[in-house]
Amino acid sequence: MTHEEGPEIQALALEVDRTDERAVQRRLFGWREAVSFLIPVALVAFFARNVDWSEAWATLAGSHLGWVAAALAVYYVSFPVRAWRWSFLLRAGGAAIPVRPLLRILMLGWFVNCLLPAKLGDLYRSYLVKRRFGVSLSRTVGVVVAERLLDLLCVFVLLIVGGYVAFGRAVLPDLRILYLSGALLAIGIVVGIAVVYFVAPRLARFFPAPLRRIGRLFREGVLHSFRALPAAGPLTGVVWSTEVLRLLFVLLALGLELPYSGVAFVAVATSLLTTVPLAPAGFGVVEIGMVYILTAGFGLSTHDAVAVALLDRAVSIFSVIVIGAVLYVRNAASERFGGETG
Image 1 (cartoon, rainbow, N blue to C red):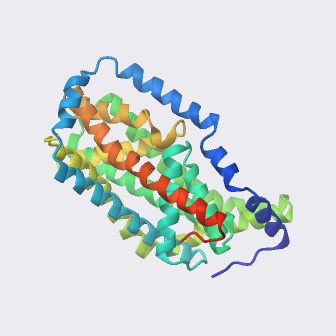
Image 2: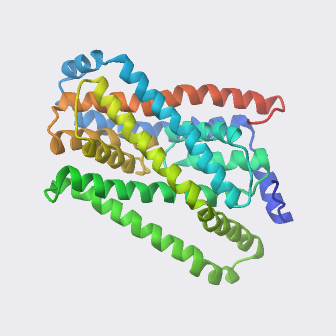
């Protein structure tokens, strides 16, 4: 379904479409992106001074490859599920798009998220949907925002339930910041939806017509997506089950054990840390946070916790960079020769 835009929006879209592939590459691999890597690298180097790296590498070297393959498999099962959920949300938002091209676009977005801070890959995949299918960029961004809201709500529930089962009421003081962050995000979601639904339409009259139209399309993208909640809600549960299973298989690959509630808590807590906008995919913050939770919360040795963090991130980030780079190059070649993403 192609959404027809007004002349102002079409002019804006044409301006966006003038960005050639070389400009995009400069944006992805520029000096700002190098700085976004250097800061977390310095952070990791500071906290890694007292790690027994010989023990950590020995633990990694003893990994069971069958469980590593299982972790990769269950992780990549989540992408078709995410694409399926995205298609439901887009359809509810007014755009019926097949799952297959959405899966490719989703992978490209994840690839960019692994390279750029602040989840810019979500904006990139919205742009690709607009360019490939002619759907309003503002509406598509609204749908992606709704998707992320579903993820954050699910993470918040799993964080509370998993933490309570794993720790009861005896939560380490330093881990309370995770609960506080989750609570603030949940409150922010409720307030944000209320603002979009009640306040934004009243403020719109103070803005020019083109901006009012963009705001309306964004609002419709967010709010109309929740019509797909009966289908998107269970799929969100499946997505986060695969996240928990991935970490479980990583632990099994290293010969380590945690209670299932603990695995769920660590998985969602570290996913929450990826929202920190300072570095791509929360690089540095996630690894340090995971090591701290595993050692202080569950008694693992530092070198074992480091091995878990390294292997889990290899599965969830490094593999996406490798696969995503191939897709990105193919997508660039397709665009160059007049092909389409899909």
